[in-house]
Length: 161
Image 1: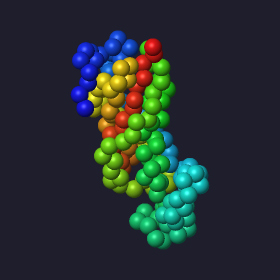
Image 2: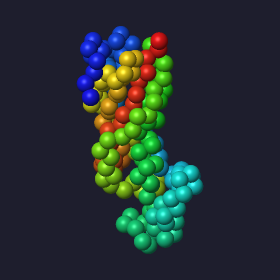
Image 3: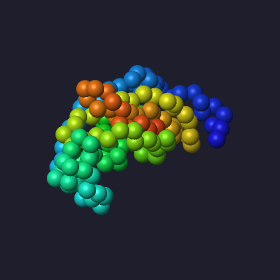
Image 4: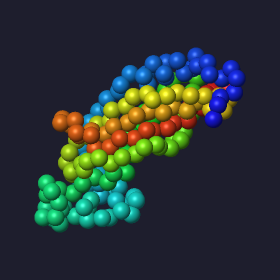
């Protein structure tokens, strides 16, 4: 989809955002506690024993621990961006626009710490006053850096009128 003539020029309101998004950002660490995993299971209805039964996992899974849901890890990719994106002057709001190329690469056992690594893929005009921000996201285990998940996250940036 090509942009209308004259809309490829980046508005002043997005220049700081582009600079922020261009630099690779590393989020703080988050511990994947069993209580958080169980709460996610309750919210989604995914009560597969590999996530919620520590006793069975002890004998039935490599490492002997339950593992976090892939979609729980995926949900972490928006956490650091929410406040940052909404805080840029000239932005009315930011909408989750979807995901591309999501891959679950390695399990994350209960008790492990993870962090999100982010970088800009593109910032493209959509409709007048709207820009599509595409970011590469990786959820990695701390401290070893093993990548558990990769995805392209899409956010629709709506500028103030």
